Image (cartoon, rainbow, N blue to C red; front, side):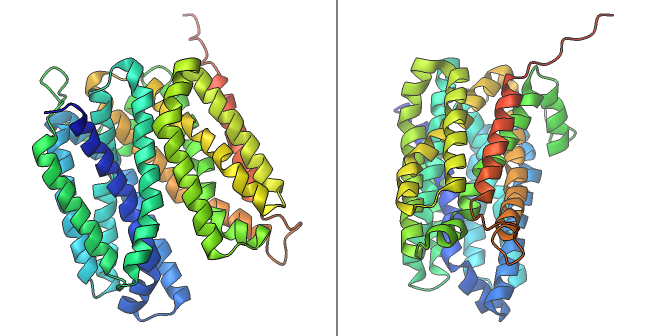
Length: 403
């Protein structure tokens, strides 16, 4: 069996995770209104509840899934999750009540927590010097999924609000069949670890990771950076309409350019940057471009210049894969699932909190009572958070006091 097939399966799995979210976004307002009978504003409230439940489940179950994969293997965890995911999308496709949709999103959040097992699989099959570049491929798969998902979902939505759910179920089922034939197990008796409930929850996983040198500091860095980077999907549509008067078509095109730029950076360019700069300097490189691009967007008045800036913004995407590579090498082989599970939970916390904060900041600086009219305020906050990331990264842990 060609050695590239397993990693291809992993990348497709992660792309489907991202596509599954974006695929149903264009039709969720219509579907919620159909099953609840409410107005568009009421549908928006339910949409927020469904999104929050999805993220909370990822936070809670990321470490559990990662620990299960450390004990029972990556293969069964990934394949079972794909099967449940396919069934979940089918249930949502035929759901007749808002409560069934809610249950579907809860189950969907749990199955999407398999990101930890999938990323741990990549760590298993990668040499130490390959990890950062391959984590870049992982991020690129997400980027491609986020680009393709809304586009395909919007097209399928013309057939009805339930069509994208059937498509997502078919994708998950097809990838399950692919995995059955091409995915070998990577967890051997040498690295297999017993399952412990005290480690299989986000707080227990955080404590365990905190015992490894420097990982607590890097988890803080990871959270701040993910929180800051969420400003793009969270506020971009509102910001560009308020600041530049962009139409939905222009906004969609700009998001596609951003996703393609992200995929190009994380899937290809990062290898060149890592080879020339190494992981630590790659992080400095990405942080520099992130601060610059976010600060410029915060004060920019010209929409054409914003479009040109998009590839510059995407260069900041080298940070997370390089950081993951450093963190992965600090954890033992039998802790890779646990580490990736903890990181999934950290990302989920950012996914829960950042939209609330960033949209609130946007509202405060664009409303009638705004001290100044500044639609780019969330981007300035994000730039400040990236500066905080740099401070956390360069800080050295204190040496233990002499006894």
